[in-house]
Image 1 (cartoon, rainbow, N blue to C red):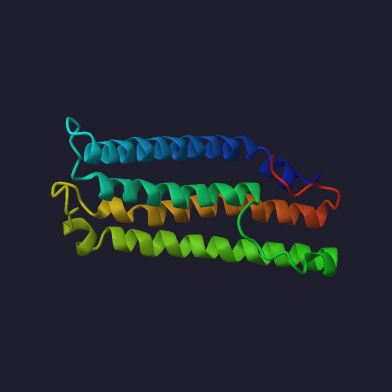
Image 2 (image 1 turned 120 degrees about the vertical axis):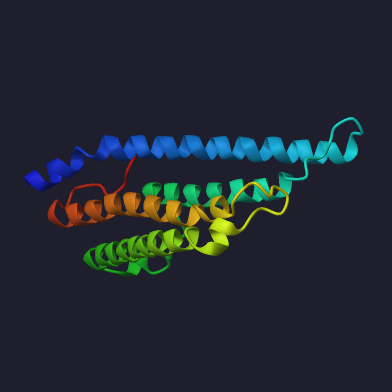
Amino acid sequence: MPAFFRAIEKLKPLYDWTYKILLFICKLLLIGDILITSWSVAGRYIPFISDPHWSEEIVLTLMAYMAVLSATLAIRKRAHIRMTAFDRYLPKKALMVSDLLADIAVMVLGVFLVIYGIRFCNSPLSLRGKYASIPTLSKFWQYLPIPVAGVSMIIFELEQVFLHIEAFFIPDQKEEVA
């Protein structure tokens, strides 16, 4: 195995660690969503429980974070939506090239999400805008999932691109990540 690939292989624990942290954050977000939604629903039907006025906006914000982070986790497990109808008809090398190009395209999308997401988060709309039900909370937090998703996509797509390149040079190498 060439030295370059051995060096890249040493980064696998970093990817594993990042994956576990993002998965833990997604679990916390889901728990938060369930608790706040349950509280809100209970507040509508049980007289001695108050319905928090801020629940809908916070649940939607938590859902946005959870959606983009869980989508980036799917990149690592190669569980994202993909077109595979013609995979069995393509030569193996053509399929490898198409997978590599698709992952590079998704990584480029991640770069755009970071660049334009940061611009949007720093825009007057985001910084001066406030949640309707929580006037002390900036809309910045509502738009932050955009660059966060971009960074996460880039991290996990880098790993996929390196695995595709490694598969070109080491034919017996598995492309799947545990």
